[in-house]
Image 1: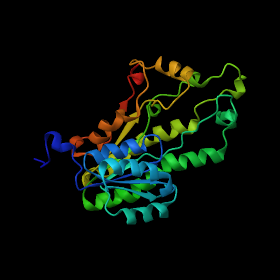
Image 2: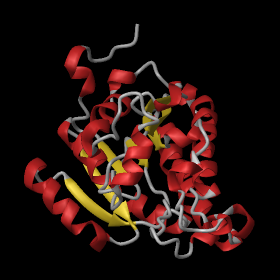
Image 3: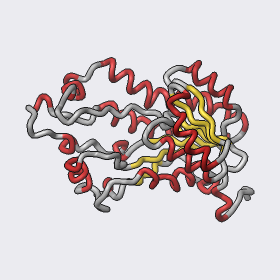
Image 4: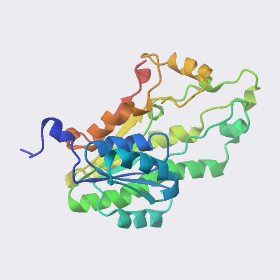
Length: 276
């Protein structure tokens, strides 16, 4: 029998360190709060530590001095290696960094989101952050976990890891077809790729007790235009977008011993959108 904590004690990360990439984004602070709440020392990373000052201050006010920030570029292997040295032992890696392109409602620059005009430079840059970056972080932090005999990697994917974007959500009736905004191809490719990476690494490091899972959130409300919200919620059986804090418990479960017998899985939490 495997000796492990039971009940609510299985959710504890006391004495462990969790590192989050892209922590300056919409959900980075939420992931950090979730893990700090169950006792982890949390290291937030992004391109510069300055980007994280407000998030660190807010979290430290509630969870104490177990919250720190480091500069780390997930597209630069040496930058990751430096952050790994500065962070020390990392027990939990949350691959959260991504590029989620936003476009203005009047259609400015939206032609470049369309496949027929999508620049190779944008493809390379967005794949580098969201997919290659997750691989490089897993390579460095996951290898250290495997050498120690255990750890957790959580890849933050999306409901668009298993369904295609419904481009009708982004249509603007005042624009010609060739200028209609779309969800860029890179976002879907990155998120689907993360699921493949999750499964591969779960099998690769299973014997070393490194568990690798993915969390695929649905759309999170972030002051979106009312028309967009109405279109999207019509596709969601629960009839609403997610609130920012609604993924905290899932992160706690997936990163703690509570999910000790789970690896290689993609957990969808999307209000039911992908079941239809």
